[in-house]
Length: 88
Image 1: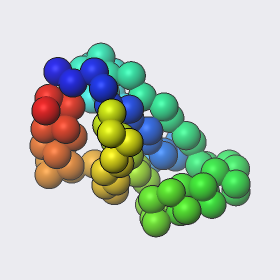
Image 2 (image 1 turned 90 degrees about the vertical axis):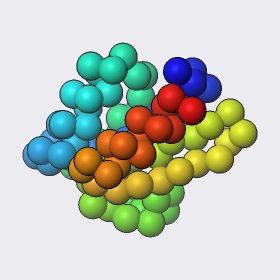
Image 3 (image 1 turned 45 degrees about the horizontal axis):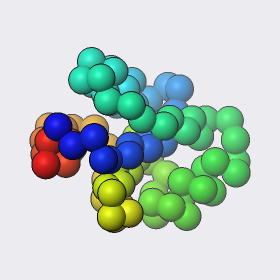
């Protein structure tokens, strides 16, 4: 497992996919930073500036070289991508 990645997720309280993503990360023991954009306009703007989208969840994975991979949504394809990034 690569311990040199940082995970940041943008979520909303009522998004079932945000909830599934958080449950997955908790179960896998992965530390992550969560930013809930539900109630704060400045956080929505930050999400758009950083990721280019505001549809949650937005997942940003940064490695030790400060390269960031951004993907949107929580589905089998993104689950596979995240798993590969965490285990590379």
